[in-house]
Image 1 (tube, rainbow, N blue to C red):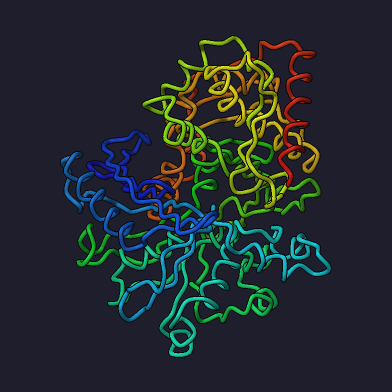
Image 2: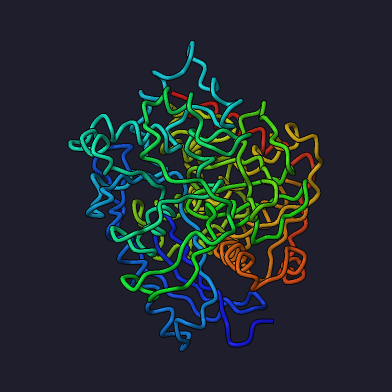
Amino acid sequence: MPTGKYIGAIDQGTTSSRFFIFNFQGAVVAMHQLEHRQIYPRPGWVEHDPVEIRDRVNDVVKMGLQKAAINRDQLSAIGITNQRETTVIWNRRTGQPYYNAIVWQDTRTEEICKAMAAGGDMGCFREKVGLPLATYFSGPKIKWVVENVEGVKQGIEAGDAIFGTMDTWLIWWLTGGPDGGVHVTDVTNASRTMLMNLETLNWDPDMLKVMGIPRQMLPDIKSSSEIYGYTSTSGPFGDKIPVSGDLGDQQAALFGQTCFTPGEAKNTYGTGCFMLLNTGEKSVQSKFGLLTTVGYKIGKQPAVYALEGSIAIAGSLVQWFRDNLGLIKESNDIEELAGTVDDNGGIYFVPAFSGLFAPHWRSDARGIITGLTHYIHKGHIARAVIEASAYQAREIFEAMEKDSGIHLTALKVDGGMVQNELLMQFQADILNIPVICPKNRETSVLGAAYAAGLAVGFWKDQSELKTQWAVHKTWESRMAEQERQALYDGWIKAVRRSYT
C-alpha cells in the first residue's frame, strides 16, 4: 500500500469539470467542481469553449489540492475521463482553437452523415467501426470543421491544425501544450470517432479517405492505462507527475464499476443515459441498434469490448423541466413533485430533443408528450419526465440481451440521478431485475483513477480493485407483470409518434 500517496483524476463532463483525489482504498479525499457555459448558436447546435474548459480544469485542480491539504508530489499519477465525441481542432504552435468544441449532442452534421451513407444505409461502416453514421460521433464533426471554418485547411497543410476529443486537448495542455505537449488519445475515445478500426485499434485508412480527414491531424492511439507523458511546470500540477489513465466517461464507469467479466452491465444516469455490457475480448456486432465499442484496454493486455446503448436526454430533461418550464427550483425537487401522484396518469414524455439514439437512431424524431387530458397536472408531467429514462433503459436492455445472447440478471447503476429513489424503484420495476448502486457512485472518475494507478503500480491488478467494490443499495422489482407490460407498450406507442 503506497504511504502518503494519492491518485488525482479529472472528470471533464458535458456541463462541468471536476477534480478528485482518491486514496488507496478508492475513497474520495477531496473534490472540486466548476460549471462551464453551454453555447447554442442555432437550433440543434451545441458548443463549448475549449479554452474556458482548460481554465476550469486548472482551477478545479488547484482548489482540489487545497481542499485535500496535500502537496502535488504526493500524487502518484493523474487520470482523465471525459465527455466523449466532443470535437476540437486547434493550432499546435499557438494552442488556439480554430472553432468552439462541437459537443456530442450537436446535430449539425446530419446532412454530412446522409451523404456518406452508401445507398442510404446508415450502418454501412458498422463492421469496421462498430457505429452507425450519426451526428453523435467525432469524425463527421471534424469533417464539418475542416469544410466550414476559415484557416483550418491551410493549418492542415502547414502541419499546424490538430484534432482531439476533450481528453486529448487536456492531456496536450497538461504535458506542455505548445511546448512539447503529447498528442494522444486512448482506444475508448478513438472508438467513438468512426475513424478507428475495431480490430486493429488503429486509424482506418479507408475511413479517413471517406471522411477526407488527413492522418497527420489525429492523435496517436494508446491503451487506457499507460504513461502518456508527464505534467509540465506550465500546468496546475507542476512538473513530473505521470499522466497515465484515459477513458471516455462511460467506459470509465464500466471500469470503475469493476465490470471485468463478460456479461456484467452498468447504466450511468447523467446528462444522457448510457448502458454498457462487457462482451469480452471479441467485438459483438449489433443487429438491434446498439454500438460496438472498446470497453477498456489496460497496458499490453488485450482490449475488452462492450455493447453500448446511448440515450441523448436523461438528466438534461430534468434540467429542461426546471429551467424552461420553471415548475421546480432545484433538480432534486422533481422527485417530491412526482411523488404527489401515484402514476403517470396515462401520459408519456419522449425526450427526442435532438433525435433518438439507441436503439432507434432517428435524428428526425422530436420530443413529444402524449396522452394529455384535463386530469393531468404538473405532478404527472414530473413523473413522466422521471419515467422516460427508465423506459429508454429497458429498450436498450432488451437489445443487449438479443445481441449478446446473455440473460442479464442485475444492473449496476451510477451517476447523479441514482439519488432519485422513485426513478431507481421504477427502473427495477420496468426491468423486473434488481438494480444495484455501489457505495462509491462516482464510478467514471474512479475508473480513470484506477487506470492511472494501475499504470504506475499504485494498485497491483484488477482483482485488487474488485475487492474495493461494495453495494450501497439494491432495488427489487415490486410491479405485477401485467402492469409492467401495459406501461411499456404505451411507451413504445409514444416513441413511434415522435418520428416526424
